Amino acid sequence: MKILVTGGAGFIGSWVAERYLQRGHEVVVVDNLSTGKKEFVPDGAEFYPVDIRDKKSMEDLFREKKFDIVNHHAAQSSVAVSVKDPFEDFTNNVYGSMILLEMAKEYGVSKFIFASTGGAIYGEPEKNPVSEEHKLEPVSPYAFSKMVFERYLDYYHDVFGISFIALRYGNVYGPRQSPFGEAGVIAIFSYRMLKEEECYIYGDGDQERDFVYVEDVAEANVKALELLFNSDNLCFKFNIGTGKGISVNSIFKILAKRIGYDRKPVYMPRREGEVYKIYLDSKKAGEVLNWKPVITFEQGVDKVVEWFKNEGSEKT
Ligand SMILES: NC(=O)c1ccc[n+]([C@@H]2O[C@H](COP(=O)([O-])OP(=O)(O)OC[C@H]3O[C@@H](n4cnc5c(N)ncnc54)[C@H](O)[C@@H]3O)[C@@H](O)[C@H]2O)c1
Image 1 (tube, rainbow, N blue to C red):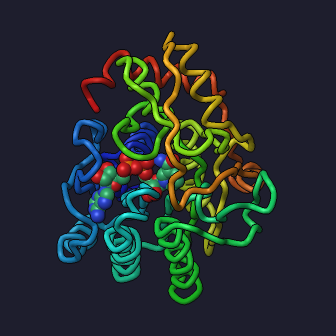
Image 2 (image 1 turned 180 degrees about the vertical axis):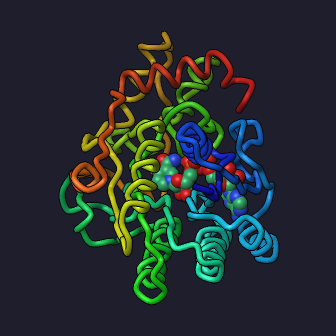
């Protein structure tokens, strides 16, 4: 298959691109390097440093490359940034995404995978773990943008016959995640603890998230590709998580012990737009996609710490 991976120089997209290449697919990466890094684009992928909002360049690429499928990971991916600058979030996550969908329609690309959010799209859940049937009550511009684009996918499926799978991720963590953003607590704590710097916890630290390891997430993208090419006329939304919540305080303790960090965390006011407790029921992904996470939290955390001890400090 010839696959367009947007955001393939970013944290998750680079792992997805790598997995697809390992499976023998052709991969074209488009990324404007706003948060991504050129060195994360895997060897063997063709790379275009283009912004998805640049309609003319995107159209030239679609015309020339004749993709079989779009895998869309490029985004403004921070809740906090979306609260500070909702317009920038909108132009990336809604307008930019719409350009891809429109190009897919115009150039006959009938399959689409979308990196959506399980951690933010439901808002504060009535109960955990939350399934895909739960009502969507996003509380941040970032989450609105993901919900709105899912709705456009529904529409383009119903009206123009584009099959799609939206993968609603929990909190993804792993090597290559930036420790300088406002999300990605495992990367941030690992990096700062290894450098003996202060670690900040926003709110009381008892907030819980579903932490899912990035290679498990990349595998979900492989399964989604397989499903889209084995059947027609699909429209699915899957939660991709572990079904367990882990608090920020527990993460702090686990990492401090693992790294030998003996300072206390610094507590800061809770951040706007963030959900307090959420973890995901991914039964549907198990049944339909044949996906389940295989990396335990301890294994995943070890891989992150090792990465920051070795190449991560220079590469971030
Ligand atoms: N990290 C998580 O926990 C998580 C959870 C749920 C969903 N997601 C989604 O997964 C995707 C990847 O997230 P990530 O954590 O790897 O973030 P990331 O910031 O590392 O990756 C996003 C990539 O997109 C690129 N990009 C941003 N805007 C672009 C534009 N207009 N044109 C071209 N490229 C652009 C960036 O340079 C970056 O390489 C995003 O869509 C994000 O919303 C992430």
